[in-house]
Length: 258
Image 1 (cartoon, rainbow, N blue to C red):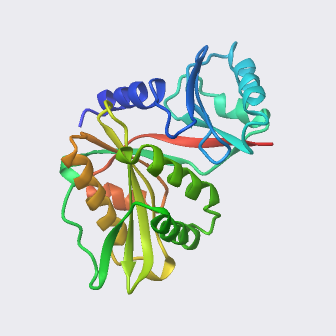
Image 2 (tube, one colour):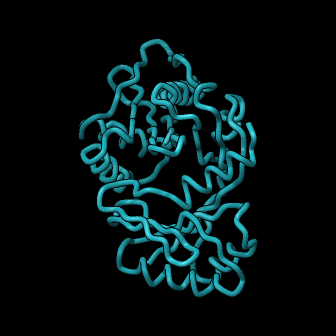
């Protein structure tokens, strides 16, 4: 993989030319900032910026004004390779909080795609309706210890409005959901995103995370997508590295809450 070329493609297609990721979401290009605005339960924030020391503080203030009253919080997604190296410090001074750093990892979909190897008694079930979303939300709550209310509403909206661009799956054992993940397909970009992979504590270490990566990679490759992209936590980064994903950069979510 030509890391510089793929990173440049990612910046262009997935950030500067980002598409709305759900119904009632819109993308706006405001000066040297690209932002996504949507309902309160959707992702709201800045996906790309090309600011300098003279324009950064006013641009930050303008985003705070814009998102105020529209959502309980919004995110500025900052990458290590972005031009203004002290942007993170400026965001902190403006009232943002930094979330844990993630690794931007990319792999060729065809090289990752495989028949998933599942433990005995486990099957992968597609999520296509509200009942399936409930199963996925149950895994999310138990795996991450966070409230899945916003994710549930966003996924229901996406499945209803544009089901061809999201594939959600749940691994079920003895009738109970034990792992889940989703694949977000971005037409005309060559990139498909792996998101939300999580396994409940008592089922970790049995290969379910790897199985769901292989399953989603096969779907993406069959649909003609060249690249898989993941924002990897410290827990998933070693697994993805062993599977063949490469780190192209790091990204830190800076969150502003009202």
